[in-house]
Length: 330
Length: 268
Image (cartoon, rainbow over all chains, first blue to last red; front, side):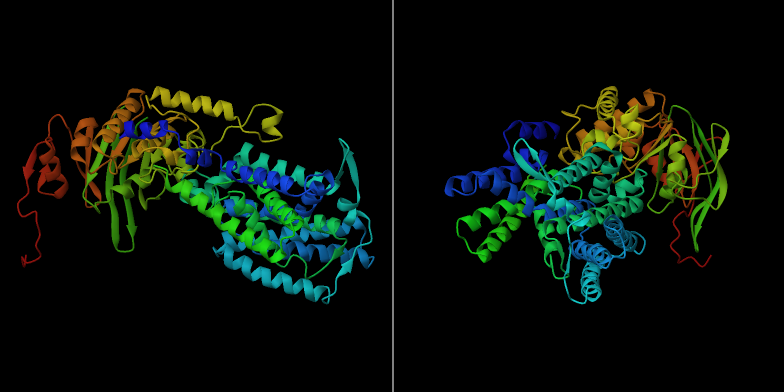
């Protein structure tokens, strides 16, 4: 029995590479896309455009970062974008009305997102409700609350701390880098570190992969899942700050499909929707793939709707690759 | 370590799962626990591993009374249980699984402040445990799902034996395995005993029990009815004891029980 297994392993197996490192596939796709667009257009491969591509993926990328944590625990968050939009409205209205300073408005918005995360986590771990249902409900509630709160109007932000992530930049090797990009990069590194280098991360993976085994080995499953929703809430609050940096205007109708776009980035990045497999490196790549496709296809003169078709195909392909790679294991 | 339990009882409503049963595990032995389905073996084992709290009776470890309020407390006393479904995370590698729930952090500020895991130390220790137990696995960084059933069992055994363990309890470790892999797992049980760690082995497989066990605890209708000696008693005799066809007398001799099978037709 053992001999056969070892025999199989000796043969070259491309599926093995994908299983070992699920980032390889998405990374390959990203490189191919960049090369194709660089060759087929004159406008794609230049610093301004590439910088714009990154800028455009900041908000969805940050939302996808939180989404990755949730999906790793075998959960899903349909309310992340509406959570962030509500936070932008709270931030902008508090500051615009003169009720608070910029910093206090910012912190209040972020705290609101954290509290919503705590609420979801409590409903999922204490009341044992399915995350899909809880966040579907909250998605509707938070979207409506945002519109009620702002009376359906958007609230402009006049510079200051709230717009700071988009307005302030520095030169890095001659390339202008906004504070928003820097913050996003730091966040990815911090979350990556927590997932891969601390026991909290090991527990997050175990809870998503084999909850019963996690419980039997003494991991507090409920507390781990709750902590994930709280951290995700914090990340969504920062995504709200990123959004105001991109467009200094809190709009209750913004990011209506942000929840699905964040799931798209996570899935294209190779994280399994069944939990316990994947990671934030894949999500970073996944978010960039979407932004590169949109930018490149636009420059090739492809209609917006066809771009969406292409991204849809990519999502299905990503899940199919995940499935295929997993079916081949002994 | 030795375990002594006296008069353990557990009732679930009208169902008596444990009926004033005794249990003895001597230091350094492999004790098999056999019994028919529904005899209450798993309730007894769960009581010893802290997953079930008995209504009555007491447990002593090396003569000191203990009371477990949960599996973690039993584990803190050095009692490790390997469940039938092994409690492994398939997508994680062997080293991670060995340390699941009790990861080790780096010494110094990186461990304290940044909570950085001691990945190298954990991998080295995991490799060392596998080597000591003679478990041949290509790479410690393989995910558990790439292993065969026997290898997975071996990983679970290695985990149970890796942390200053004093007693290992195994629930049907060979039930899902083929002949060759079962033999390896039995060998592994022997090696754990050789390290001075007593093993409680729950099994339905009489040949396996007779191959490895030093003594056989026979469980029937919620209590221990006999302690058989594989050197003295035959498999058929042990089966007779656990079905109730045979009875063990005070001095260890066996006698047949007449009318052991109650058909329910007899008015008496």
